[in-house]
Length: 169
Image 1 (cartoon, rainbow, N blue to C red):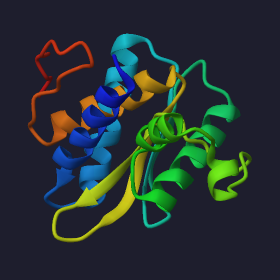
Image 2 (cartoon, helix red, strand yellow):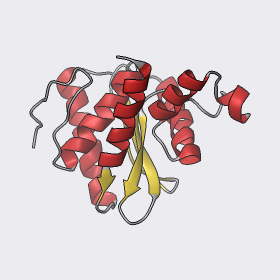
Image 3 (cartoon, rainbow, N blue to C red):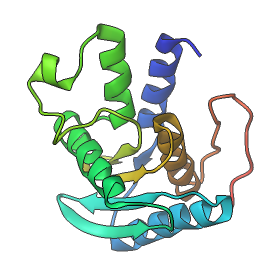
Image 4 (cartoon, one colour):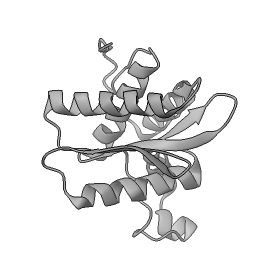
């Protein structure tokens, strides 16, 4: 897929995946959906959901390491700083050239513009947190989060190849 097409696709995902409301119950449902997808697909991922810095959900599946938690922290910092998905920020940097350190002075030890962290954007409010996974290649981390958010919002998920998939209810 062309870089400009991927940037547009991710921007459309961010625009579409706005939450009508967000609370601890939604965080639990979203987190357990991600966990269920990971177990079903035998994925070694870590999952985290935060609201305004408060940890609402965390799971580390077999095969993960403490590094996955650190990747989540760094990707989540990107969402908090830019109010965009970490994948969108990474794609934008790839398009413009440079990285978070050269363009914004942000240390790689604290920021990672790799896919997997997605903003929790509440309609009529703003970005109030993020959902993140780590353990897969960055595009797959991002797509897993988009798939789960789409399902929670009752939207059809279209993977990058464009083939619609039935969503579990």
